[in-house]
Length: 378
Ligand code: ARG
Image (spheres, protein in one colour):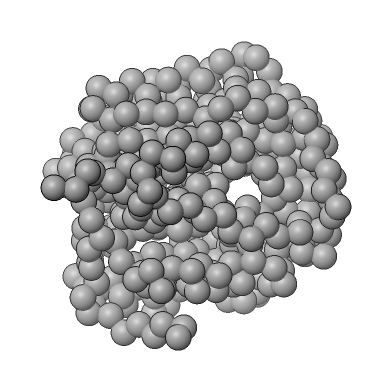
């Protein structure tokens, strides 16, 4: 028998073997920039803090990240961590300048495994331009250890002013409502732009959300790259999410045939077809325990971080400790539910799925959508 692949992950749920868990070390507050307008929760007129996060905030987040590591290790998963990186350092390229970077808490946003291939996303924000760096040592290790590992870095966009639509941040709600079917956000369509977390992997079929962090050129690049490799790429849209970024609080596959959906963010009409035609169930997540105005002060994500669960296998998953209604639902569905406290991680960009990047799961590429009308680009 062939030696097992070192990098191998085709979906979000197969039995997990090796995973990278983020770290809050040296994290800074995300700066204001054309692709991002961070705001203090419930106090939009207060200035958002700048520079490094406090040692106390970093320690609190790291403690919870370490708790996640312990659960994963108790389930036999090999856990790897990012390299230290100075996120307080400014970035200056020929096209832009930004006063500091962000953090390495959410590898999901930057890195994605497509079978035996590692792809580094282009990223969409200036402060995250170099966020691949904390993962490069690991990528080299995998790439050196196994000649079957493919490694692709997507083209870096300029992130110059012209790539953004800065007015986006000032559009009144009525305008967003009127434009909800045009899917135009803070990045325009001129350059290839995507964050890895806008994708969800279901074997042969990859979903990509059009969002503030992934544009149509980005989706086009992904199609041209992935279709010749045997994937089918499906753009998906959630018109009622006026600030979409990253699909894993909106549409979360739990096992073959089952997707957890966000009751406030229905799919664009017609896009549910591929799921229903192939006997997938779309199941609404219960309301989160916290309301949006109860989320941590510096957290830029919504209360729907509640549904950002992480699968250890098709029957075991990890859920935030306080999200009892979701835990009960998952329990009824037959999952073994592990819980960890994670709210102190929220202000670093996400919850359990965001803070991880799967390198190796059991299993191979399967076709979970045998009844599909798909038109490849070529
Ligand atoms: N935009 C999402 C929400 O607020 C948060 C997504 C976080 N996901 C991630 N991979 N960082 O609902």
